[in-house]
Every structure is written in structure tokens, then in C-alpha cells.
Image 1 (cartoon, helix red, strand yellow):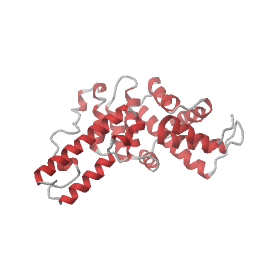
Image 2 (tube, rainbow, N blue to C red):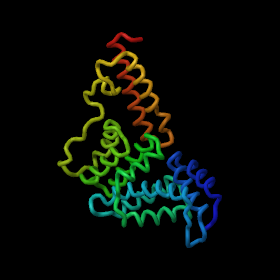
Image 3 (tube, rainbow, N blue to C red):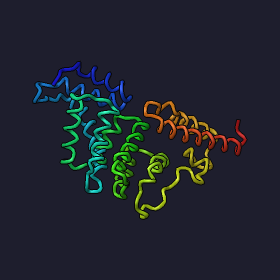
Image 4 (cartoon, rainbow, N blue to C red):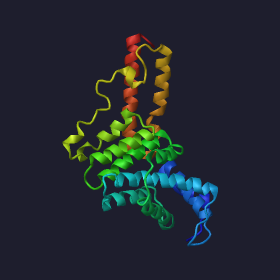
Length: 258
């Protein structure tokens, strides 16, 4: 295995291809290269072990979706590999480590809360929302979405701290893949939700509460926050950002606020 400049190489590679998620994985690979004793044996430092936990947890999350319905299709496996190979852009040497972890993950029971906790400690909310979408992409890569696959992704979304509104926005983009009527209608992300609910407020909140909630949510869902995740997430963030603004203006008008 070719020797690299370890952590600096990995982090630079990650930022070049996929923003913070790629950089975390790149840094992890860098630690592994730093720890290489030979082509056949890798000695892990304490730091490398922590980094490896992050990579393994991410892979377990994705492979858990692939095998949730009791079978793993070639298309699902390739979707996972292609995320690392093309979306994150890792070359042959780095991808070899990733591929080994992917293959071994199918032999390991997934502790979903534990895996999601390890991911949540290292990623932003927007990146975790991206991962929920990625899990859906894995699930539908074979042309269909089963109920058990969706139940797994919904559980993962909850453990990752994704709120119901955002989860349903992602969920609804894959509605055409549901083959069974037993799924029931997909809940709309907006519907008749009150402006107070959209801002996470009670109707009897103070005016200051309204202003604070708007500023916090507008900052959280600003489209610039997800620019590195691609057009789909810019569109999702823009939609949520606009709805937050509309809710804020509605409450201000109702209360006569400037």
C-alpha cells in the first residue's frame, strides 16, 4: 500500500470532494495510513480507532438499509460503494479500506442507536439530513422501496435527531417507489400546520419568543448551510427557509409587530 501524508492528505482529499463529511472520512483514512505498519497489517492508534468508529458506523447505517428487508441486491451494494468511490472521490488505495469495511459490515449486527450516535457526534444537522436521503437512495436503487426499509430509515432518522418535518420532506421525494398500498399516504411536510407550529412555538408565547425562534430557524435552515450537499438539499433548505419566513410574517401581522 502506497504511503501518504497521513491525516493532512486525508483531510485535503475529503474537502476536495465532499465537504465536511468527506473530510471526516478523509481524515480517518489519513489516520489509518499514518498507522500502517506494512501492506498486510495496520496498527491502529487510539485516534485512528475513534476515526475508524465513525467510518464503520456510517457504513453500518447504509448497509443496514440494504439488508433491512432480508436481502441485499447488487444495485444496493453498488450504491453504497459508489457513494465512497465517486461522490467522495476516493481512489484505489483509500477505497480498498472502505470496501473491506463494507464487506465485513454484512457480518455484523447493526446497533442502530449506537451507530447513529457515533455519526451524530461528528456531523452537522444538515449533513445528517443528507445521510437520511442517502439511505433512501440505497433503498430504492433496486427499483422499489419496501415498508421494512422505510421503517428502518425512519428509525435511523429519529436517532440522528432529524425532526419529523424535515424527515417527511425527504420521505416524500421517494413516494413513487412505494409499491404497496399498505404504506398509507405520505404525510405532507406543510399541510395545515399553523405558523406557530412551524416556528416551534405555543400560541401564547411572547413577542420576544417569536423573534428569537425566527432568527434561530432562519440561521439553521439558510440555503447556504447546505450548499456543499448539492442542489436537492439547497432546494429543500430553500423551501423550509421560505416557509419559516412566511410563518414569521403571518405572526407579525397577526400581532401587529414591526
